[in-house]
Length: 377
Image (cartoon, rainbow, N blue to C red; front, side, top):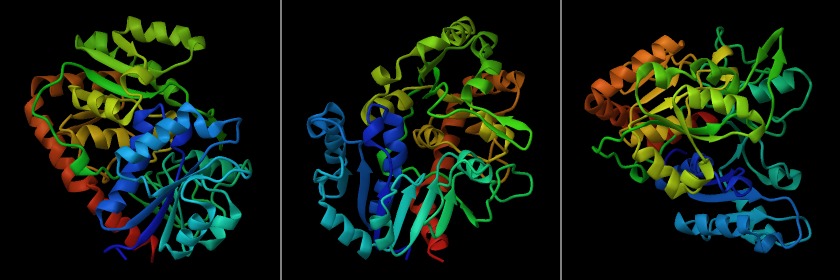
């Protein structure tokens, strides 16, 4: 099946269309399958609302689909009483029934009638730990009605990973990056950067006597790294005004805070932000770190492909990717400061290694061939 077929990818782009990095995170899968020669349809939805069809979010979504050559390959459901934008309901049902795989990102497609028509339903977990712990605690079950289970938590299922498997056979994968869309540049940027949310849409999870937290709970430990290193740092950070104490802590630590919707709100802006950076400095969610998920960020994949070295908090990456050159990990503020100084002092060598790492391990052709062979087995 890795040689090509038909695939349906379902996920939430339209409701986060003003976050260029999130759009890229999902479209890498769509564009990657298409590059392999697969026929791809992307399914999305928005909650019903007055005149939603003519809303700015829908307009931006349609323009994004057009810009990536997906004009005839998507359906945006806007409510049960309206026809979707793009492919009709009848066309969606037909294409789902004909497809070899339905890849459902975080179980976002929840229409039983559509799911029932799919030959093989693949749950794609891009936020490892949360869904599994929710199910184990009896809070909710994202995984029902699926036949195969894929996660970017590369250690899920291993003895040293705290994420419960919920009795499911998890297929682990690295995040794909479509290399052709992310050319490397030899031009050196000036700042260590990142893009992210301070808290995100849900809170920490209490599981087996431990609290598995968010990015905010980790980032506070590394707030002073810019000041300690004496180097330039910027983050496009989605942070609420109520978190003004944390914003002040970051500013005092040497961080320059930018509005993510201004500097990375569209796919083009996000790409430009990544590719004009010196390197990535990435702090992970507490869940990923303390559960030892082996999580690899789709954002890091973009930095590496662009020839931007990545310095990221260790989530248990042993065996998932080679580290030390191009990709460096840290667990303490002291290790983080040392790593940024190392990259700054020998940027060209780390830049070349970053691109080579992406081409060797994260290229969508390689990642998706392996994934579909395992998911279809």
